[in-house]
Image 1 (cartoon, rainbow, N blue to C red):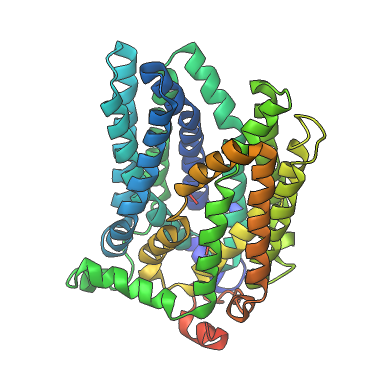
Image 2: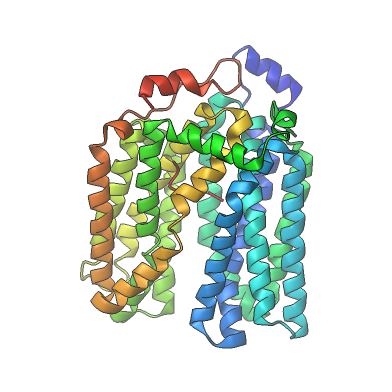
Length: 440
């Protein structure tokens, strides 16, 4: 926020979020880079198939990027809480821009090799692990606590819009020229870099200099211990870990089922577009849905509804039918993401934001790479429809178990502090006796 906005905030009169130029610059930069990233979700496997002809190698490269992100996430969070957050954001965007530009150049010259593609996947995955927690801390630094729900709803809309537009655009650009989607992705990171510079992100949290005197392992253990002591968040972590594993098993069964019902690639694209459309609608409704229940009750309710919708995709109504339940399945998901982000922003001390975000990423997404393998095995042995019923049933069972957890049911979002700073976590968590299911 500007100095004038901060003075207004202290009087309890917040200007509209659209006038917060620092947040809007961060948002525009992330919108550009996320669109670029979704382009290459499609372009990377297409390129590997063109170079090697192996679908297995295409899956391996995707797994390597996810694995690199997870392996670097814990030390990255510690660095975010120790060093200049603005420089970390800038460095991450420079690395990602140069990596994609180098790959685009290699593709353009016709000299691209598998090891180069693999190296770019690992480097960008590692850079992602630094950028994510640093950006989470930056949003807290430029948005007043009372406007965090609105800010995170805008973030959700950005992500679902990119997921809807990016894959078909990536396929189109790859058809025009194999190097084109990677060059556009590099340009998107350059746009994000300029926006980060202009957003004037706060540099260091309080106590950063003192933390540099301690070991990084001690820093990470401090954040992990903070989470472990709070039973509500701990229960949410366990639930999100299983939910993310199972939810990431959906893609291959959906594709197999649509093909088995006579659908072509276009039909598959229409069906998967339902996820993005539902997410966009959900982002506009997230504030209303988020007010219906506290997060500890909202989590199993949203995931349970998602599970029923997944089971409904197996109904024998033709290849295009799954677009309806998949659209409905994702309507409530943005509200859950918004509520959980606000929960963390209001409970976690600013000086620990980077580490807690990284620990959450590792704890909730650690089994995600296994999801596609699970989905592929189920689709192979029981068919696409049978696999979706199995996945939906697993999610439903997890939701029922989570809904009767006393620790999770007691989890709620505290009120924003009037001063515009994050409240201390201890009193609220002591009351509770003390994740998220998703973020870029």
